[in-house]
Length: 249
Ligand code: BTN
Image 1 (cartoon, rainbow, N blue to C red):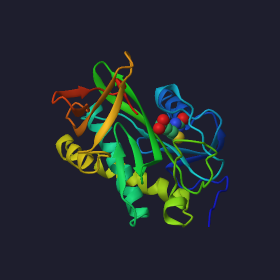
Image 2: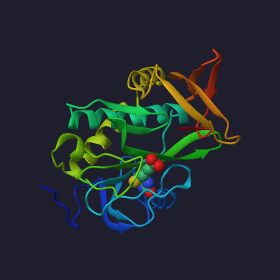
Image 3: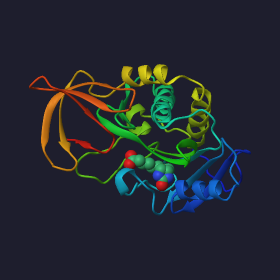
């Protein structure tokens, strides 16, 4: 059964009915010095949910997870370790809620089931000098939505994949616990797990260069320690792509 009510769920969760973006709300808390590490902001509905590359993140009211986890005053974190850590943790959680499915990570940080997107992640980093100090980790998970009203690139949800409804708050709690648990894990070990579940690994793909629009065909090798996608082009050349420089076609 779904249970949404306006009361506090517990002492680490700020649950809102409606907000423009939980990431914006969480970032404001962080900037005002009002945020404790581990605080989560969630909302039943976001009027201007933020996606990757300036896109809007749309989600039906009350059916899904829209959460932002605040990590404040981190001491030994770097951007790449966090970039591996978050999808690895979220993938583990979704896998545990849907053991019958294969849950994979699509570089850079989408979660896919049966070649369809079930979760998107938007990490907003705060640096002091060159050190990563804090971050707002925005996570949108399709939980109980079954109709996305989209003609192509149709997303999926836990309900569609498992045939069961799930309680969004249970998933929020599990995601928070998984991210906090993995905070001390080494980059190497996180990178290994990320690559173990990398979508399209060892598979032929077509990519489009973001700036030139040029097309490339090749086979996905791995994501390297600098969080670059490594692809062997069909002519044999090994290419590395940084975040934002290519699009999946
Ligand atoms: C993407 O795949 O484009 C990333 C989507 C991230 C969406 C989540 S929902 C909760 C949090 N608040 C936002 O405004 N965006 C993230």
